[in-house]
Length: 343
Image (cartoon, rainbow, N blue to C red; front, top):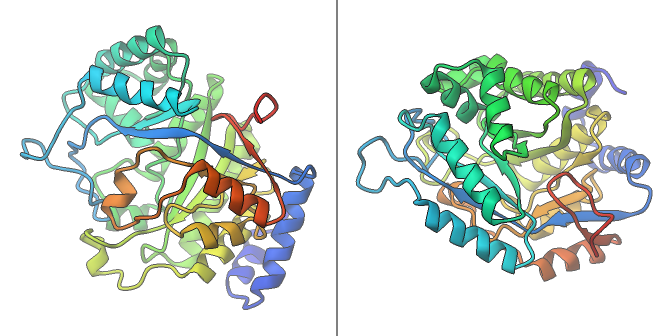
């Protein structure tokens, strides 16, 4: 385990290969079997109406906007049907923060899905959960418990961006604060639900602020052990208002360095994901030698990051090929990172 200062020193080091080798050794301790996993699932964005106006987002539409939508249940069912037909095991469902969708809407949706399909529901995000609690007049604990009872299986790490309130005030001042994000994940873990942790970096934050984020998730994992994985990815500036202020996106080198330092510092996380969605397949493949042991999803559908300019695509065959070419054994997993029952 390295200290916060040692991690900061690594961020200022130009020994990229040495950092990568150290991250690779920690990956091998967690995953000596040389397997790299991936998942077949789909991102379903049930609404793009949102009241938060985050400056890094090109997906949302304000209330009443002509391009705004709430997907009808039948459309969601059809998307899930197609996912299962393609070998999918889960759906990641997220949307904007809608002021009129109370908890009963989500309970009805999740129950309806579970009555029709055997599928893992990896849904919502900390800001969505706090929004549902707020508009429904419920405590956080009761909200999460009711969502679990209606079929929610796990919560993604979305809405974390950078867990530093100065950064959040600058890029998403209306959205939930750092403590709210932590409270949602802590409460979910206490109720026996697993979640993931994410970090969107390269949005103008300092290295100290990036470390604040890593330190918070490391401490929460120490406390609860409830995170299945850590997923760092880079801010995409196209079509976003924040893009006018952040003139350059994080480079592949910065991505690989941050991925590796995340793997080294978060040594209490079993899984760290190398992302192709924002970085492309080549950098994702390199990331497997910089601490990554998972390449995420083939992503049958994705609307949010692509709205901000990420246009990379990958088939199952392509993901298996880049894993094999990097010297690993590709294995399909489920949302909870279980690969034992799959090829």
